[in-house]
Image: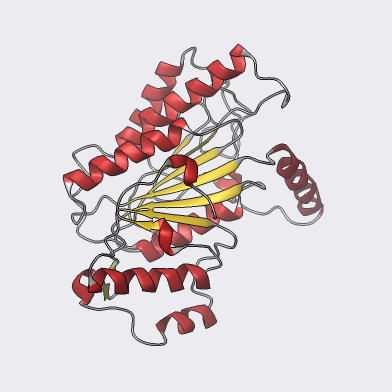
Length: 313
């Protein structure tokens, strides 16, 4: 697996490398550790943001390795040390946000819808601040093991919360520029609008793993999608095959819902102006509520909102 942009990571079919390791890098700190247990990260391998962006884009086709965002537990005394570290991280990231963006690139997404999603994502990246984390997840087609793109990065922290220097601003803008460059790769014409199925259920389970690893950040889950599940025997377009009565309760009792406790959800691109669309909306309102997240009717939208309005209201 090749690294992403300035600490960001391209992920393949299997998610992140075991342990979720990454070196402490800023805007020009070099590449992430390779996907092996024995080798140590190579720092300072590149000298410019543009070179790192190129590596991130070329790493798109690299195969993934290891486990998901949380990595593997070490057990015993290591768990106590990890708990202490988590407390330190939470204090360092107070006020920061984790923004998880699900990108629906299925055939039901028209070119206009994809253009709107891309514009909104650019605006969202421009509003990221010090210590924020961004996660980009291409929506799965059928199950969690199919080949989709994933990428994440954490913006540089502010060394002195009481003072922002010109160097701090430059590092922040460089991180935003790098994230924007990677985000555009998700919309390349070879894949965008081509997928025949949309498995939102599977993708939300992946998103839940990132939400659990927020490091104390507020989690905002943004779905750039028409919200028409088309997999696992469910076909929501035209209400052809909606989940039957009692389905949601059965999923909850069986422990099959994603754990999204406290996440604020925003949907952009879903049409609730028809009876069919309203029925789909009502299903997702119930679904996210059962998963512990907050999705208000005002945040289930066809058009993109002002980025500054994101978050639980």
